Length: 283
Ligand code: SF4
Image (cartoon, rainbow, N blue to C red; front, side, top):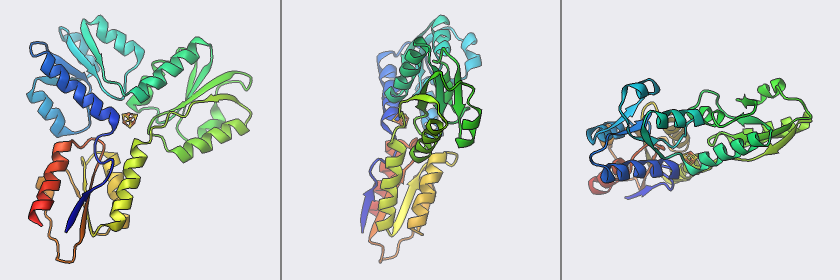
């Protein structure tokens, strides 16, 4: 029996980089209190492990109660004012904002300096979009879906700079941009979609097509892991969704030739390896 790990399983580049930043800070600053501004990733095991090493995830309202230290900004990024507030409270800011997200901050900031209005395609409440909004200095408007195009508050003669949340669906993005252009708005489009999610999903789908059994590792509350599970289940009826190795109760018949494994964006490598080793050694 063969056990194969899907390409792009687990952390994307930005999350891996943020995690590495935290571990580097722990190593280099054993005497300094280290915090992350919100949980570094949505994985309870990781947050617990970091806490055991003294790294605490804090919420905004705790800022005023702490006496400085190192504050790590997670891959989603934060508004400019938040960054300034953290600094003014005496923290050293270590910015682990994903470079792809940082690029969006820079482009909307520049657009603001040039007096252009900004449209952001994405989910209004998502921390990444909230962060982007916080780098806009001119009027901005968030489009969640195509129906919001009807309510664009800018004139057709104004210059509009348009960006997207990194995880927005590419087809929907193109559809919205086409519609805005058709309506006669003057937009400067920067496609800021990151393909990490799409790559992970299509690699999982390909593997699930060939596999006799598929294992998806991810947090129960992680929507991208659930999505991976849905995609794999459609291709392979024998698909299991687990958080850690403890949840895995596999019984494989002799006819199983290929077991595939994939993992959501916030699943650490050690959990993936543990599952992989177990399947390889036990079957
Ligand atoms: Fe990961 Fe892409 Fe988001 Fe960066 S922009 S954190 S690489 S999904």
